[in-house]
Image (cartoon, rainbow, N blue to C red; front, side):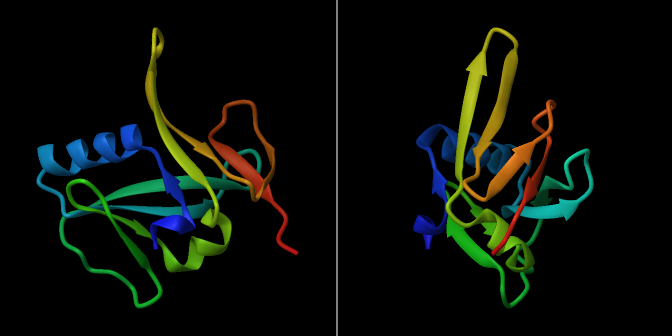
Amino acid sequence: TKSMINLTEDADIHLSSIITENNFKAIKLSVKGGGCSGFTYDWQPMENLETESDDIILDLDSGHLVLDGMSVLYLAGMEVDYKKDLFGHRLMVENPNVKSMCGCGESFHVEIH
């Protein structure tokens, strides 16, 4: 369900345009170990919709956002926004599960109780 994560309209449009322009079917979001704080977000284009049974598929304006089933624990409740400013543009992730984040904003630490 889309309520699992909150995707702003700007983020939806941005992800949809990447999918459309590159002829992808979806973009998969997962959490990988690594980075200076323990975990990083991993965005992967999918040329076909081969998903695992526990993956969650969200419909975008065009194509799909697939949440990795193994990562759902870390992704639940997060908000994804797309920001543009003088210094460029990027997907911004606000994640309520994150306890600390490194300065670069690329990795984070979670505590699951």
